[in-house]
Image (cartoon, rainbow, N blue to C red; front, top):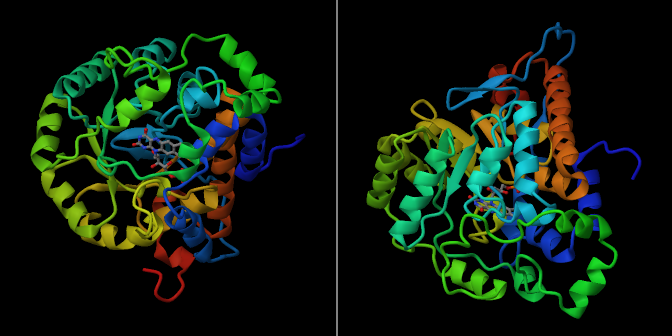
Length: 383
Ligand code: FNR
């Protein structure tokens, strides 16, 4: 593909270059994928209001996220197995984000460990924690994130029970992939991926492997991991984690105004309105549709961020106009990484920033702080 002009182009290239097992892992939602589809469909239902004859010189997309300056309010969301989309994927994505001036969030389920990423980046990044049954693992992970200089802990609350994704089961998802005949046939055309993987030793879950003692092959490691999430996570346990961490805390996976009030009462630094990109509760309402009620409930007390379904700068604009302080992108940067490595993540960020800036100008606004409901035409019954 000669010219990349949008996230959709990166997605097509990602599909072509990454093994099917890993592309499908990214491009799937749970069960019927209704929520996964609604996340993008509901963004499309919102329309922007054009304004003309307004001086648009000196625009800026700059903002802050939990007090940290950012060139645009768009962080890279935690994505498990990023290092399987492309060799050393977490390091490449973290570097691209660092150079661009937006936060990178490393998943607990990453291929490169928190130490690997810290060693290859100059600035602090954020660490996303999954709460496992084994407190020793959780405590150890928090300590490792602290020692690695991470500047915020993103605590994910919506995956204590795993939503099933049919494609992963059918593909026999594992990291690294098991070399069955269909996988080998697929890999025969994915030579770029193979070449990259030859150059790295990082091929399994960097934060977890040392911990999963006695677990042999990768498929038993995958099922071992899925049994480790703590189904008893509650506010008391969240408080224990907050106290042990002692730094900036972002609660991810809030989709309900009552839960948002509890998070604000709890004193978190920010919440992320999210349905995990449609990968967990299938049938849940899209995050963009839930955003206004959550902003109305707690927007004056806590930073409200959102993710799930953002594929363009126009989508970022719509989320900000509905009251989000900032946004996070998952698949949009993963497509870039799977397509073109570090340059692809940079491309995804550039595309989104250009779209955000252009659309903001055509809406008659000079900066992201000025965006408000008035910039949108909201269909009846949307929110
Ligand atoms: C995720 N997400 C996620 N979230 C998290 O807290 N920890 C994780 O390890 C992962 N892993 C993960 C893998 C893949 C392949 C995807 C697509 C997503 C959810 C992620 O952080 C974010 O909430 C969504 O990706 C947002 O939706 P979009 O932007 O992908 O539509």
